[in-house]
Amino acid sequence: YYPNGALKRKENYRAGRLNGLASDYSPDGKMIHSSTHSYHWKYGMEKWYNSEGKTVRSLQWQRDLPVGTEKHTFNGEVIGSVSYVKGMKQGPAKVPVYYDPEIRANYPRDSLNDAPFGIEYVNYQNGVKAGRAICMEFHSPDTLYTAYYRAGKLDSVYTRYSENRSYYTTVYSDGLENGSRIYRIPSGPLKDTVYRVEPYRNGKLHGLAVETYQQETGEVFSDPDPGSHVSGYASSYPQYQSGKWVPVYFSETVENGIKNGPYVYFRDSLNYSKG
Image (cartoon, rainbow, N blue to C red; front, side):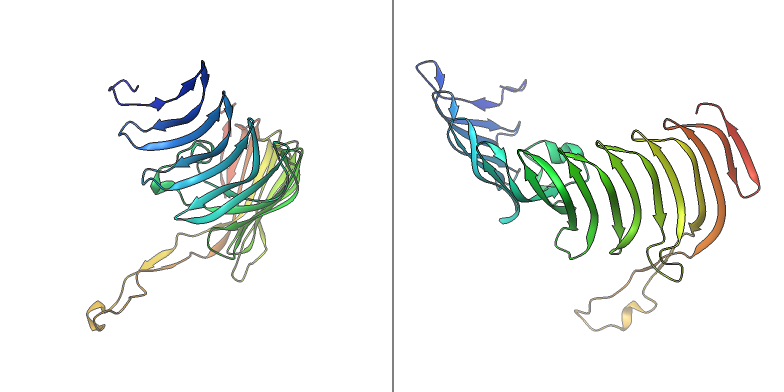
């Protein structure tokens, strides 16, 4: 039970072993997870639910091993799937990716947070990600990133995209960023121009980071004559216009993720000592 007395989990037993349906509940009394068991082994379908009672994930079990296809759903649509062979993830998969690691890792998810920001298409070998992966924006043809995995960890070149063009590239080694993260202007007259370079070592900024262009603040335009439109008209306002990219010079020295050394911006400069 929860501290307020509400039911938290309900289990059924037979001959001292977990048997039948086991259910978990939220503090407000809604079922958030269910699984079936036979003499303590997981058997049958395991499901996770959001606060609206909709299934967000399902997985079939046999003698405590996952079998078949694990499915992730959003509003009744299957948005992710992973196949299991002999209890391990194998083959091509679609994996929902969320901004918040806690949302991604913990089920059930709140109904307001069910939609992922992207779907990663990747291959599994013996339970871990391997080879090239591509993540597409959810319900959009735009690419969010491309990556490579080795033994389940990011390895080799990683490219993040904006407006379906390269935003930055970097290099991973054994799951940690190592090398130069290179940012490029994604669109406009200066498209593909390098505007920032950041050095990384073992997943942390380390070395001299330099920026040679910055984007000015954009503008928001309101409808100049909102009363001139007929009933039912869908206004295209407010409209946002991105700011221009302008030359600058900015650099800072970082050691293991902590500012430590000269900081230069145009003609102004400061000096940091370990933070």
